[in-house]
Length: 469
Picture 1: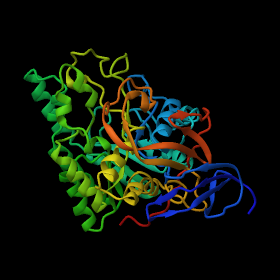
Picture 2 (picture 1 turned 60 degrees about the horizontal axis):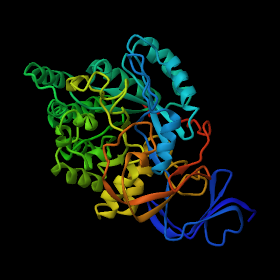
Picture 3 (picture 1 turned 180 degrees about the vertical axis):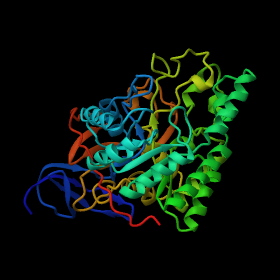
Picture 4 (picture 1 turned 90 degrees about the horizontal axis):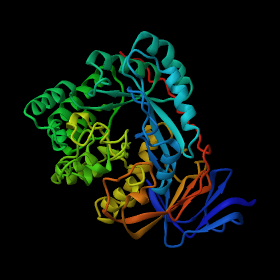
């Protein structure tokens, strides 16, 4: 065999289908050999005592995302790349927003320019908030031709939410073009009613964010989204499922043979609604939607992960600093809960938390972990065989993982642009030692060496799904 660019030797290679001791040979940014005695290479990394995992694939990240008020998320593609590599993630799928009354094509082009400054391989989901004929018939096909393979629909939030009629338009367009649809499921009118009632009674603290978005509003919207998708025969993925009660809607759909998948996030197996009841404004650090539930719900989520009902765990990284004019306190620390930016950071924390809480504590196997954070998200994103696996022909995205390393998480370790982590002080067992992206070492011992502009755009081509009726 001719000399390779890189050989990772003496590690335990873990994929979604099995675990083996072998070396990994890399040439031209791709895996070209798995075995022993692979010959020579320009660089050799000794992975003795370490796991060799596929790079994490995070298909739910809000990065440098424009907002309707003219601001932009403070997490840039450069800082997000650093954070992702620090936590063992090598691929992200973010979002291109649409603002009502506007198109999507120019925003898509601007988003691609922003993302090109980063270091991580990336793609976009296209958010649809205003499915006009111009957008759906003229601009959407151009965005698809550029490699966007999925749409995002919100069933809550002003000014993002779609009516049922509009959601059907999105589903029909996705069906026509062979796209995946990802859905944020909460009943908009029910949430608004609960919020108004609490505010009218003077209940404004962060804890009322969770109380205004109980499980029933998530469960109802999930069932409704599935029913409408069933009507159109359109596959969907339900984003950030917070508890087993909501996941049961997916169980019933899958039992009927529907193409419905569920995603969850680290906050739903670690944080609780009680975190939003911390003194003063501190609870704002834990506000996201759907909100974390109760501690008893954590095991229910793990049970659904083991069953394969929730087969993807993304970060839903949506970073707003605690302070600053774009942060949680931008409207003041006495702002009512409905005026606090909604979302938490989690890019670097995702893999360590899920490994520690899942594998280290015996809740899931190594193979299930790899499927959850790498292989399944890559498959659903249309990147199977290229990302999320260690196989000949795949991109050489690898993470060397110390399964026994104990770390207390701090904001410094997150390496992001946000001034806090909701996981501050959490002890984890299992930590990334080295991250390799397309055959190049981009992080070693917490130090990121990747150069801005080195990330690649990932085209995700669609397929014809066949007749709708």
